[in-house]
Image (cartoon, rainbow, N blue to C red):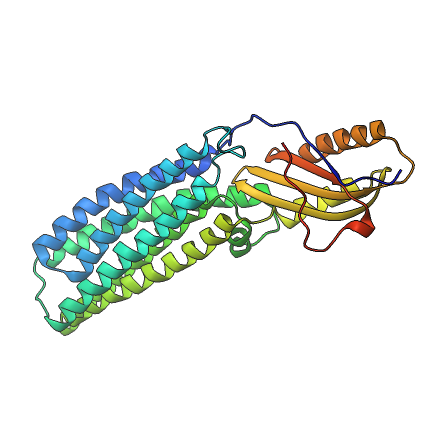
Length: 335
């Protein structure tokens, strides 16, 4: 039988997006740390007049707001599918991650660079410098703990996905930005603290307050670079990234090995959230089989593909003759 150009699709899945608690653990740890550190940094900046300390206070305040936004995004992503949003709300995480990147750039980076530039033009003596060192030392310890928690969760996530994958590749291939956003933020925060300490040390050695102002500008540049990287990764997820290549290959192997499938015309996957994958297939069935066999084959493929990964929630199969398939053609949406 020559397969007709009809669409056979899976039944609707009612499973909501399940967000791993590990990412929330890292966010809560960072939230508590940044909120406490922000208060102490602002107090130290007020008492000493340090530009770098003020920039660090703004940095911690922005990070605190970012963690709240990430938690809000994770909560929204857990909403189940609805008639208005048939594929769920999983991409809310991607949207709020992009907002976080914009806040880091708009508030953290720009304000830090502005403050540093103002103090560079109008140098200001730093008083009570011991308070700055005490606060920065406390912040280094707390940020190190928060980064260790976030990195441990990130490493566990990487091992679960692919034990052989490198960390930079894991960020590139990762579909849950709430995990690597916290790692980026905590890393930038720790680097910013080191820069602030260096600025204070150079000020003490030379007596030039311009070093403190320059440290504030460098902190702003670090935040701008962090924001750009986060925005770049979030943009790809918002546009729509495919599943991990290893999972795509497994799907191809299962479908291609089926006795009633002559050829896979096209295989496309799409992440609608960190744990919600849509799979669309255009296949050419062997000639001479009846419609009941086609339906049975589609049902078996549906179950086999979903069994590969719990994140696969929808599988759409389009029966299309290989000769009639055009490159770039996308399977029609089913219901």
